[in-house]
View (cartoon, rainbow, N blue to C red):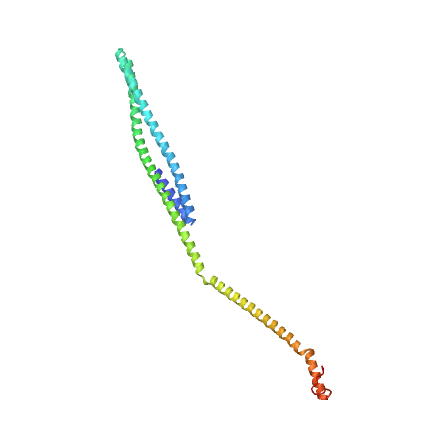
Length: 233
């Protein structure tokens, strides 16, 4: 299984694990993005290592090619100086370095092809993570909007409950009763005050004057008073 196949499987496994835990969507999404970026960082490190290996193969290829050319120049020089024996040795060394250069070239080409593919996959993965991050923000915004709507509906539903308004009606009735009782108390107090006033006036008429009148009538009935005279004369 390739690097990115393993990475994809790991990310899917982490996402499924988070979903199975039924956590808060916002926390799940944030954690998923964090883990995706951590896995991306690991993949990037491995791709960087692969690119470094490719560059080392290129350097070795170029070095062997350089040595091959140097030994060829030495072989030419030996032939120019009439040293065919040295020229033969130089050609043998040139061939050795050329063979190594060819092998390094083959390995370098394969490594470069692989690293180019890995770099493309890494760029694709990075774009997907950026896209997932944007989708995360959108999903979180949708989640918060849904929560706000739910809260508003619950509030409206609570206000629609008549129990609260029934309480106000009961309190209004109690206040009406208290006001009626207060008015009744005031009326009774006024009646009592009026009764006391009438009693006081009645005393004025039934006090000493009433006794004198009764006494006069009694004297008349006994013949103690002369006609035409009153007791006060």
